[in-house]
Image (cartoon, rainbow, N blue to C red):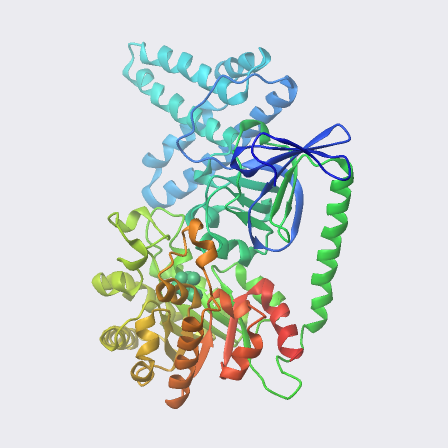
Length: 569
Ligand code: PEP
Ligand code: MG
């Protein structure tokens, strides 16, 4: 690699200029291509336009545009999107708060039809400026005008102008609060993405994720895997306005992000993309086949899901069940706790769709990187080892009780199991089982039908693995969470991108704890599965079978890949 700022010729005559922050501009045949490297999270290839997902602290800058017509149309589309958002807000507020509160959204929608305001924005666009800047200018002009009026009602409209202008600017700038706003699927680039932001995004609108920060073991990466979208994290690049809308390629096989590749490279990448898709199609021949080795050893192969919609992907992948429903995703990206009724409907839908196949619901694992404002969690020095999961549930049992009621009420619609995360002691299980007993008793007196529900725990702390002989006496099954188990065993923060190279899931300490857990579980006659990301690591499939693991639960996109690995043994 040449040093920074240096030119370097390659054998094929291309010229590479290496810039700080690890990106290179390669000039081939007069066309510039920006190429960045990142850490691949999902292997695959995506080709499409870039969408820069920005956070809330976006500042409008005076930006000139050359395509005035296109900019005006972009603004008009933003107005339509804003109206749709306001219609949804109106309906929600009408339902939850009544007509008086809902009216404000109707007023905002009407303001978006105000010809004077719209023309003021369009005039600035006609002068050759961006939609964001034009809205900003019109906002100032109109807000001042309303504020200077004598009539109190009209004065108050200044705030509404500010509000609708902010909404429009957010939409135009692709600022994240309400997901992404695009008609066509895009490659989402961002400084970083939280799980809350990622779950709010419409999967059908995304081709790939590329983030500057982030680690491949974070929940955002896990979400990208569950969506099977080619994705890179820790990509050494500087995000700039001019990237937005440019054609790009994400190569998840080689960890490369290329902006405006020349026609030849684009062509080559499309060929590789087609090959990748063909390979995935080839795996489909394994649908309906058993998870059995050539010498007759069988294992259950389930899917991990984050929300109700993911069930379709699990069924499509021919998963034998759901080995991990990360129920906390129901709590993310919203303003208040999901009610018992809402959760009941979600679990019931999953169970009905799975049609008798087992669904293991993990009780909420909020905390650490999965934050929600309405939980009012205080900032912590060490959130991964802090107030999270069952620690919150045992402290604030009303939250857990609502969830357990919803699960038990749904239990008569299929085969459900409950699994508790972040266990470190027998006492926790005893207390959790007491709460379960009370919930069941209450539901019985209320006349609800309930099915049989297995109770299990995640083994994802070294403490739980080490005392798994004792814990096994208390539960029906173990599911090993290798993501957290690796984090705590190796003392390597799974969120820290600087520690990627220390993230060694094949470390003998991790493998020994897995083996110890399987043996202890079997000694007490309970089944043991793995639901962490390691379950999909086909280099270890043989090892897991030799250890006697009973179930592997992987992202839906990996089910057939793992089935192939099992059948190849
Ligand atoms: C794990 O820790 O391995 C696990 C499955 O849970 P999560 O990744 O959601 O923390
Ligand atoms: Mg975990």
